[in-house]
Length: 338
Image (cartoon, rainbow, N blue to C red):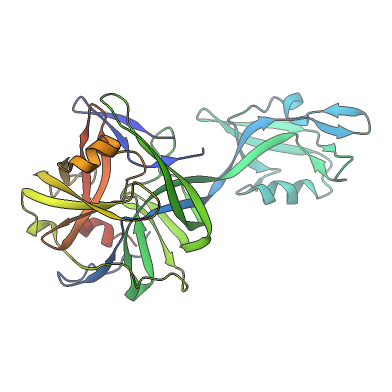
């Protein structure tokens, strides 16, 4: 799920451990004195997509035996079901609702490898459910873990990741809502040169951070649950990128359980106008973090960067050939995205 890019001959990966395949209304980034609640804790994301992807072809039990209408019509794993009889398909329910209607024939429009194809399908009547089926296994959501950057309690918003959830072509995946849960980190795969590490976590279904609303170039944003308790979080002011200095800083992240820890880093480069939101190059200095994870690992994406007591951004990428180094996005950009 993780996209890799060759930037100036330096390999990078999004620092988010996705488990499957995740005009805006900007708020004012107000003031240097804007108060936020510091993140650094992991979250589990269940994001509803606006596409229905075929992930398997299966058989349907009918009165005439087993058959697969999808296979008979040439539908393949990896196809995206775009329309049925001209009606848009955005979720699994849309497929079932359309098949339930009394059409004489069903024409399925699919997207495959950049092409649009239309095939005629004769659905099978499932003996068990008494419903018409195509004989496909589909998914309309993505799941994964990442790190929350900050909570804006005044506006009941949260921000995470610092970069988008993208598909294999690098395009930002459009989402149609979703739920963000608490997460418990139970293991860390250590990163080494050439192979990124990763956090391994489990969703805590009893803890809901909020509802996902936007997946954009600066991360995943959403609306905070009224029941989410911020009383134990650290209040922090926003620091503009213009105030960032080369040298000492820290990140807040979670490598075990759900306990946030502070780790020492250095800001080694500042690029205010970077078009790819790679505003900082950071270097991990903390020996505890290096010993535990090797440096930056997948799943730490969104870990807030703090300098002089103010949040200045979030971790977004790791250098594959040096896991102690990576990129970060400025908090100014994150605050203006939702």
